[in-house]
Image (cartoon, rainbow, N blue to C red; front, side):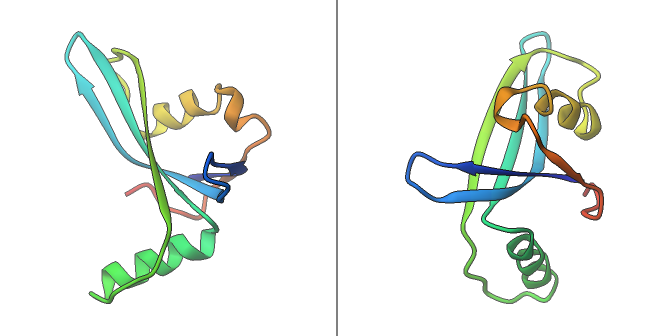
Length: 101
């Protein structure tokens, strides 16, 4: 799964494809969601192929961390649900083709 939404970063680069890389719970303290954003879905697919084939790649990836209140049941699926409530993802489209890894 991933979210498709055009977002322009402070440096002027526009990213359109966003996937959760990791979810980390710090017991009784906080939950952290790591999100990777790509300029296009094709760049995510290029990354995936390069990693599988041990090849080099030239891909821009913007990583952002979202800290939220501790949630012991937070996982990748519930993390996507959380991201969908944020203003910056208003009007998103689900991409169900990218499997949760």
